[in-house]
Length: 112
Image (cartoon, rainbow, N blue to C red):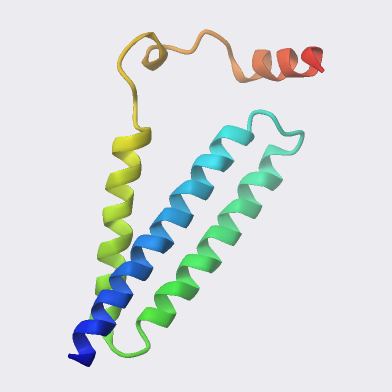
């Protein structure tokens, strides 16, 4: 029974890690066009996301590889959820962009 509880806890942790990772990734993608230093934002976000997730996987795997696999499955389930929730939407938004990144930055700068 203790092993089953550990696997359930590890899979729940994997879901939480996946939710954190993909929500932070989505936040980064939305902000990268608006920031003055997109490279710093991307690198900083990448480092923070991966440190948190790898630390979580390490904690889940301390009692054996089964916990690590359960956490990884939870992480992948959350990926599917986020792709379905935030994936391409049908309609004109999914077609070619109407403005370039440079034009969007210029509009943002002029709008302030």
